[in-house]
Length: 402
Image 1 (tube, one colour):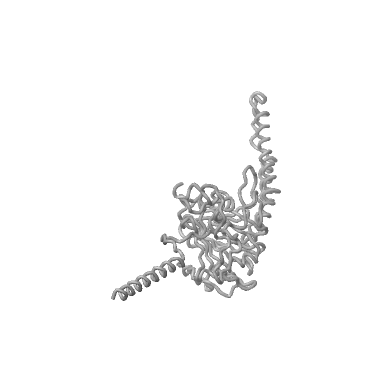
Image 2: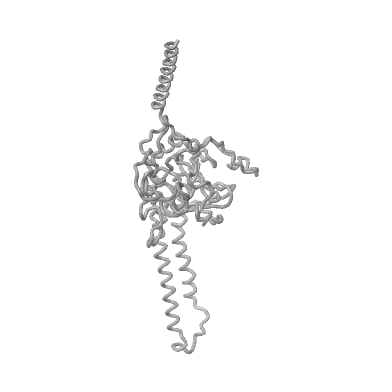
């Protein structure tokens, strides 16, 4: 009996030891799983400081970026305008597409209309105006010295001088006639309809940010807000860097346009009157609620170009900038595909309202053929947009605290 009891006890001990060994082995082979914090890791934002860089670290230290070698999701197309770390490839260039300190005159122009306007301004308008100012100043000085009381005690009583009256009427008319020819020609070029192969960009003003649509490219939509300074955002939130652009002009999402291809710009607004203006393009077009304004231009050089809303539109009017990435047509097509859009056929006219004259589609904004006075309705078909939202700055937030 005792031996049987001892055998039973030994069997229990052996089973207990085996179970402990299995438990220990299972614990050793199970990978450790960190406790969930309830938040997802932030992904690199467009134009954000590279992860691990000195700009991204509060203490200025540099650590290797953890996302530089991250694999793209299956079927995803990489954004060709961004580096692997999310920073923009194109960086602003001094004296190009932005204001420059201690520089007089208009910005360097990169469109045919802008070059024509710059020549008119520099070669004709300014020299003639300068001569007129100097002539008037010389006449005033001569009159003050020649006809002062000490030199001319008996003033002339001449009331009319036919020659002088003819001259001061005819000379200004001739000057205006000289100015009229290049002025009217430039005005006609600015509002010349875009050709069939133009890329359509629709800019919509909001208080106080811009939204953009590419109606001929599958309804791609982009929202752009101004980037704040580093000391104006919470820790971990995106802020402006030198790669993004100058203060008050950098945006979280740049608008991409092709070089050498006509751009058809359509502007409107959702609330009050805004104005879409890029000085280097010689473009300033009002965005009016309920109306569609249109112009066209062609960018001749790649680069980054900045502008602002140029119509007083509210308290944060100064904080709705415009940033343009001008890239090659192939890179633009790749960017459109990266946003989920498509490229139209070659020389295909735009059907975006207002439809181009050569388009088969005529929208309800066109004048009725019968000349009726019916209401104007924008009834264009709304495509499912692939929206690139503003990151780091909520839409419409602007600089509330400034």
